[in-house]
Image 1 (cartoon, rainbow, N blue to C red):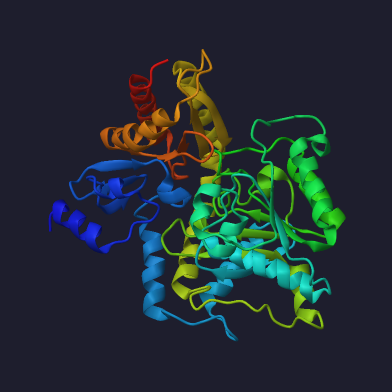
Image 2: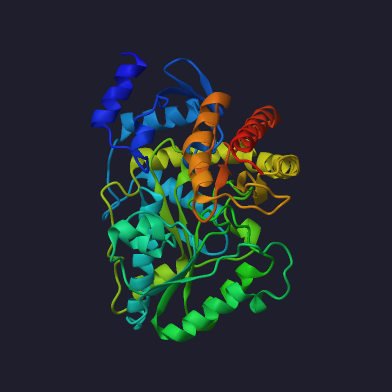
Length: 454
């Protein structure tokens, strides 16, 4: 079947995710194979996967060892649940995660996606407080522009009005506070920062005894790879400890090497109460997500008079194939020192992106760390002119998609709070691949400047 027929069948029968009708009507690529940092389409053309799928294909495409782990598990035990029993792959995966996670984060509840991981953390936080005799602790604090998922609970915690609006009213009792945009490095005492003081104000306004959890990403994706200033995460830890609130580190993107560390702790130095994860745990080779909880919290919930069970579960949670894939993926990542590649190449990538900023008037800012970056665009940096709404739409819907096709470098245009280009290559990308990616970004910025006048 040729690609024209495949596209026609997709348009008729396949429901696309977060895809506009006009995009679905275009000649979108149909991928048939993956090799390393590249995707190959039906025409045999190689596309550099500069977004690692959706921030998830950390070990690159086409890993025979990970595929073999999945095939071997399917042939041995394709399914068994973790309801009142267990199976070897889930035990091995949970044990490995306990070894890699910071502090006493040692118990993992497996689910199937990042959104489900956030839902699990929400439910755990509420039931934990109820088990400790504080059922009034149901409210959640999260940050403006933060993305935490698409299910109703996770969407409620998300701070992006545009994707929430079609589904309201959502879960009540969620307050959003300022993020760390514009703050980087040493900004003085963290407790005196407005973005930290605002959290304490919200806690006091709502009543500390009503707050269940604070959700934050180590590096916030929404609004473009916001790296926190020095002392910010320790200040969050202090506030949560002061008021008995659970600190949830949403690491669906940030964990498993995206920042050069296994978990956000490597960047923030803070041990949270719960970590949500998904994407990089399997490098996208199988659906898997989960919550890693402090063992003390799990014990307290189970041993409480109103506890005994975490009233939550999913048929596919901790699926044998998915957890076998996770073990193979994380073991290979550790054995091949993939995090070392990110720590070595990340600063070089950041420096090169800043060089492109200097060379292009349309670049307002470059943010990020490790293998996770955002390029924020404007019309002209010298005059300070921002993009008009019409220019932004043209860049996001026409210029960048065409540039992705022309250059063969796949990135992501982002409109969450600004016009941005998101960059997140596979963690195995070497200097040659990163150079190709940078040439692609340079060409994309040239295309923007041809369309947008100073």
